[in-house]
Structures are given as C-alpha cells and as structure tokens.
Length: 402
Image (cartoon, rainbow, N blue to C red; front, side, top):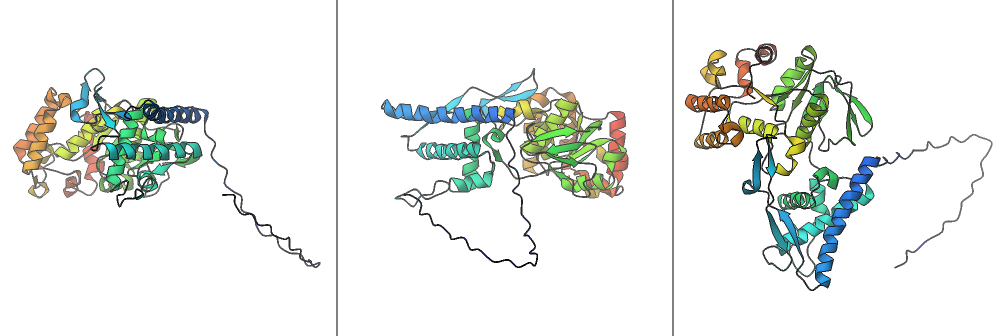
C-alpha cells in the first residue's frame, strides 16, 4: 500500500529588529564505517547464509526433503590434539530435516535466526543474545505455539548456526553480556575510542563480548605478563593495592568461568604481544576446570579453540600444599562433597592432565586433604597477603603448574 503523504504549509513569522537566539543544532553522530576487513568478512558470512537458504529452496524445487547438516557439539565429537595441545571438534554431523517431527521445530528456529543474522549484517548492526531471542520470538500463525520457549533454546540454536556456517558468533554480529574486567599497563582502542587502562579507577575496563581486531586494538602495551584471577572480589584487592603498577602487568578477572570475550582478549594479548598468562584460581575442581578451559579449550566451544585456548597458560595457585606451607588455619577448609570428588577424578583423567605428574600430585593432594580452599582464604594471613607475599613469591620462584 502506498504511503499517504501530507504537505505542511510554511508558516512565515515576522521578525522584529530584536535578535532571536538560534536553537542549537544537534549533530547526528557519524555512522561507523565498515573496515575493508570487516566488509570482506561480512560478505563471506552473507554468502554462506545465502547458500544455506538456496540449498533448501533447491531441495523443494527438486521434490526433495529440505535438510541441513549440523556438526555434533558433544564430548563424543571432540578430539584432543596433542601436537597443538588444544581441544578440536571432530567431523561428525547430524542431519536436521524439515519433515522429521522431532527436528522440524529446530529446523524452523535455525532459519529464523539465519534471517535475523542476515538483517544485522545488511544493517551493519549487532545484537545481544537476548535481543536475538526476542527478534525471532512470535506465536506461530494458527497455533498457540511460540517459536522459542526461552532464551536457552534460542542460544543453543545460535551455537548450532555458528558451527553449521563455520562462522564465529562475532561474525554473525551477535554479542553476549559483558562479564570480566581489566586494568593495567595497556591502552585499548575500542571502536575508535582510546581507553587508558592505567586510569580506570576502582571499576576497571569492562571487557566486551566482541574482542576481534576490527573492534579492539592495543596500544602502549608495556606490561611484562597477565595475571588472571577467578573472581571480582580478588581482582578488587589486586587493583586497590595497585599490583599491576608495582609489578608491571595487566590484571584481568573472569567472574568465574571466563566468557569468550575474556578468553579472546587473553588469547590475543598472549599471541600478539607474547605476554605470559598466569592464573590465580581456587583450589577446587571448579578452579581446576576453569584453568583447563583457559589452557586447552572447552568441549562446547571446541570449534573455537584455535582462537581461544592458551596452551602456555600457567596455574599460579592457590595450591593444595598451601594449607601447610602458608600455615593457614582450619577455618579456611571447605569439605569436599561427593560431587567434588567425582569431578576431581574426571579432571585428573583429562588427556592433558592424565600424563602430567605435577597435576596428578596436585589433585591427589587435594583429595587426600579432603577439603578445598578459595583464594580469599589467604586473607586470614593478612588483608594484602595475596598481593604482597603470595603471588610475588610464586612468580619469583617460578612456582606454578603448567
């Protein structure tokens, strides 16, 4: 339907000799131009989306059932590459078919998200995972069924789309919630804005979800290493004590298991600027797993290990032997439960830990102790014991697990 247009008559006002102040004009912010690299990347991703749709159209015209191949994202399709020292995804795929009642819903969801991604690329805009959920959410015409029940279902389909296209989430113009902080001797150029991470106050620089070179660049990298801590509470102590300044480093935290953005930031700083990465994590199966993810990659993101995993990362602590050597009190002990014990044994059986005598001793010692410890337990020695004694001594002695 043609849009109805209206014309407005010009209203001419007589102006007296009295000067009339002009209204300030608000300049529209310039649109960020696509870099040549990003334009090429977007064109490549768009072509893959078009090919996905064309294959389905061709199948319909040939009276064949529309289907698509989706790589299997499971432990059974994950391989340990001992030479590269990272986890990699295998070649197994599953077929997603339109006329299979068990797969039709996922088939539809995949195409919905494919359309949304194509829209983002054409408009050169990004969307959050939450935004993608709502963008494709509606009630299917003639039914009471919604396209997605919740965001978890939507996120899973987006990951399937990533591996099916062989494109990273960032290449699909999708970002996740920020989680992770950085401060230290480095300047970050984020979407054209220079951010001096030496002057971030108590809050630090929030590490974004998308840390690719066309968005994030590094400048004035003067640090000697990166210290990555597990939690914000520990990071705050290091930041307040200006550890990054006195020890010339970059200080990061991942708020638990680090997001892709944090891991990508660490990976880029490590590979592009040859900065060693030291991890200060809890002495428990969860801390050991976080280290494993940073070092070797994860099963769910095995297809991204090449750009996320840091095989050279070191585990600085806290260690099972620290209860004795740091003369800690019984108050810091947290008893291992059955789940902890089972998980510890599973981690000890990982191929990259199985033949590592240091890690076998570490996990065995924790199990023999019968308790786990958090990095925060070092505060029982002194408020700044971890920043002034523990970490400096471990670094000086090169006392870490690799």
